[in-house]
Picture 1 (cartoon, rainbow over the protein chains, first blue to last red):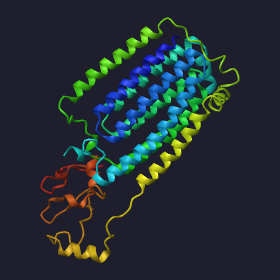
Picture 2: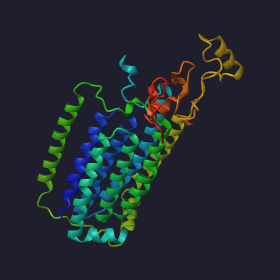
Picture 3: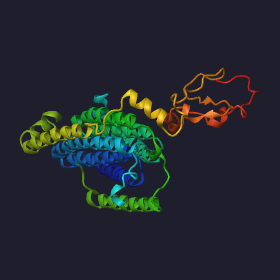
Picture 4: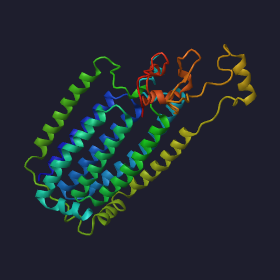
Length: 99
Length: 263
C-alpha cells in the first residue's frame, strides 16, 4: 500500500480541524479542533519517517506531543479563568477589546 | 493486539484493508466533531480519532508513539478536556447558530480550497516514490532507536522541552489560583441583604422543587398558590441542559387528568 495515503488523510484531518476552529463557538471544542490539527501533523511526521527510513520524524512527533500537552494545560487554565469572570465558555463573549 | 497490529503493518494487503476501513471512519468522526451540538459528544469523537491515529502509528512501525498516543492523548489530554467540560458546564456556546454573517460559507470554501491544494500538492510531491520503510532503522527496536536519537542528536531540544513543561505547569497553577478580591459575606450580612432588598419575595429563600403525588424529583417546579409553576424553584443548569420538561406542562390548568400512568 502506498504510504502517501496516510498523508492524504492527514491533510483532510488538518483541514477539518481548521474549519472547526473557525466555525465553532465553544472554546473547548475550538481547543479540541486545534488538537486535531496537531495530531494530523503528527501523522504526517510518522509517515515521512517511514518514507525516508529514519527515526527523525518520530522524534519530531514526540516533541509535538509534549508541546501539545503543555498547550492543553495552559489553554484549559485560560478557559477556566475566562469562564470564572464571564460565566461563559463562548469565544464570541470574550470581546472586551472590541468595545 | 499489538502483535496483530504489527503484522497488519508489515504485510501490504492487510494494511490497505485496515487503512480503508479506519481512515474513512476517522474522517467521518472528525467531521462529526464539527456537526454535533454537545461538547461531550465532540470529545468522544475526538477520542475515537486519536485511537485510530494510534493504530495508524503502530501500523507504520512507530510502536512507541502509538502507545504514547493512547496514554497521553486518549488518556491524559481527553480526561483533562472532559474534566474542564464538567467544570464549565453547559451554556449557550453549544448552539450551532451562526453569529458572524456569512462565516460558514466562507470557511467551507476556504477549507475546500486549502484541502484541495494540500492533496494535489502531496500527489505531485510523493507520487511514484516507494517508501523505504523502517525495518533497518528499527533493527534494535523502535524504543531503543528513538532513545538513541533523543539522547544524542536531539538532547538539547529535549532539555528545552523539559523547561517548557515546568513553565506550563507553573503557568497553569498561576492561572488557576483564585484570589478573593472582596470580603466573603457573613451569614448575618446575607440575612440583612435578603430583608433590605427590593422585595420580600425571596426573604425566606428560594422555593424548593415540587414534590407531588405525580412527581418526586428535583426537575419538577413547585406550584404557586394559583396553580402556576414557579421557575425559580428549579436549578437553572437543569434547564440549560435541556433535561427537563417545559414549565407549562406542570400548570394545573394544563394538566391532562385523563392520563392513567406516567413513567
